[in-house]
Structures are given as C-alpha cells and as structure tokens.
Image 1 (cartoon, helix red, strand yellow):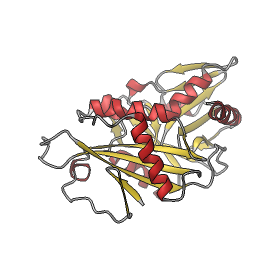
Image 2: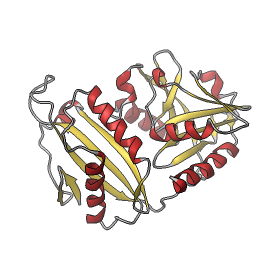
Image 3: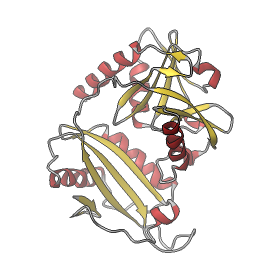
Amino acid sequence: MINFNGNILENNKLLSITNRGYAYGDALFETMKISTGKILFWEDHYFRLMASMRIMRMEIPMNFTMEYLQSQIESTLESNGLLNGSARVKLIIHRNEGGLYLPETNDVSFVILVKELNKGIYEINKGFCETDLFKDHYLSPSLLTTLKTNNKSINVLGSIYAKENKLQNCFLLNTDKQVVEALNGNIFLVKGNVIKTPPINDGCLKGIMRKQLVEIISKLPDYELEESSISPFELQKADEIFITNVIVGIQPVLKYRKRLFKTELAKLLIQKLNIKIRLG
C-alpha cells in the first residue's frame, strides 16, 4: 500500500506520463528509517525537506506541518502492517503537472512508500566494502547538489561502474577534484586523532546521518573534527574511512585500491549513535 496525497491506495497507482518528477526531475525526496515504529531524526528530515522545497520554489501547503506529515507516514506504515515495526520510508514531493521547463504552478503533491527492514537498530555492516574513485563525471558544487532531488544521474552511472568493476561503492569528486561523498552517503576520513568530512560547500549532500555524527564526534575528547576538503591523495593515507546514511548508519570502507583500513572508530560511533537514539 502507498500513500498518494493522503489517500491509501494499492501499490499499482499510475502517475501521469507528464508528471514533472518523471519529465524534468522536478521532485525532492526524503529517505527515512523507522525503528520499532519511531521515525528516526524526524525533525531533521522535516526541516531539511521544508528548506529544500523553498530552494526549489515549491509552494509549501499550509497543512504540511510536522504533525501532519508524521501522521501520513504512520498511516502508511499501519496500512502495511508496520506501525510498530522497522521500515524504510521514502517521501517524494513533486511539483504538480503543467508547463515545460517553466511550470504552470508551484503547487505540489506527495507520495509515501514503505518497505520492511529486518532490524531497526544500527549495526556495523560486516560485509566487505571495497571502493575506488568514479571519475567519469564530476559534481559541480552548488546549493542544488546538497539537495535530495530526482536528478541523480551521477549516482546511477557510478553505481553501474561499481558493479562492473566488482566494487561495493565509489567516491564522487567535484569539479575541483576533491572527494565529496560516496554513491549513497557522506564520507568521514580518520587520520590519527583527526576526523575529516567534506564541507557542505564542496557539494556534498546535507546528510541527516552526517549531522548526527558531527554532533557525536564534536563531543569525543580524544578526536578533533574538521569539516574540510579531502583530496584523493588523503584516502590512501587514512587510518579509517566510513560512509554514512540513515538506513545503514555507518558503513566502514575496508579497502580503497591497495590500502586496507581499520574499523575501530566506526564501531565506537555505532554504539554512541544507538545510545543517542534511545535517549532521544
């Protein structure tokens, strides 16, 4: 079952071929994790979505309050028997039909999709993760690259490249040849007691999990956090690298080219992340 503009429908609802999300990528989305019925970091997701809609010049409906959208997510979970379970939720906002590049309206519609997850808590993914650089295309740093829009062609092509080369992920570069993020999340690099993550103005996604870890790391007494550019050269000198997103939490990178990495800090941060969720 899906939620289309507040109506619970069978998951065979057809969108028009002229839907602006399909025709022009004129859409935003938020991917959220539900843990035993609780929307993790809901406030952060909500305010990022509202800020993104303003940047995209979408008209925010008067009823798009935090409480309203939460109730719509919960009703969709309930219709799928997941109200008290763990799930992945995708909330998509698209500008309504009409016009070509220039829209006829800035009004919006929404779709909510849910999919069951086996576990709600975060655990270290023990699967092997080997990465490399994806250099066929580059991100151009701007406010738009920080948004979760339907324009994800670089991520799609990078994912195909990774599969063809038997990699589990790739790092994306911006036009200044700095490492910006992974295909499916933000990146953190550890060297000694310094933890680096690319700044937002380098073009990386304004990630929700990135925000949680920045807050956690800033309170660690033995580490120094730097939001600064990361060069490809630094990857091979790192002690540890990990990728973050709200579904997986923290994914340690075990190999980049010939370099192997440790996972000690990632394990520590997973513990502190779960504590933060329980206390939140």
